[in-house]
Length: 179
Image (tube, rainbow, N blue to C red):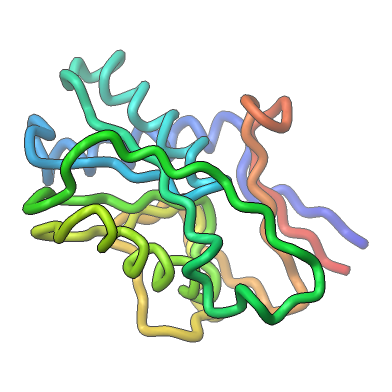
């Protein structure tokens, strides 16, 4: 097994600031915009972006929710290992709002398809966008593309992209793991 560093902690920080600036350019005051971190690992990215937007760019009161897609996945009953659900936390109205789904890695697109189905339980958004830290562009099974991407990675199927967050893993970084 080999491990290659794709992004260092410094590079992750630079990308997060770039993504925050792109969001500000498009959404300005965020009065009609909601950030939704896709459980489990998109939540770390969403929280970090919310913090940067509010503290460093003085964007007031950004609404942030967490969306669990476990029971909306198309492979829900196809594994022998029982899936563990995470918590959905959406304490606001989604109806007619601009929703930005946030996830760490866009791989096949199936998680995003599940999120599109799951969000309908909370109303009908006026618009949905996708922000990802890593876009594995050659791995898509569905026609789903990010509106905002941190880095595009050309990884083949036997390679895995691992995103580490200091809140969960003790450090920020993105790695390519080859088995």
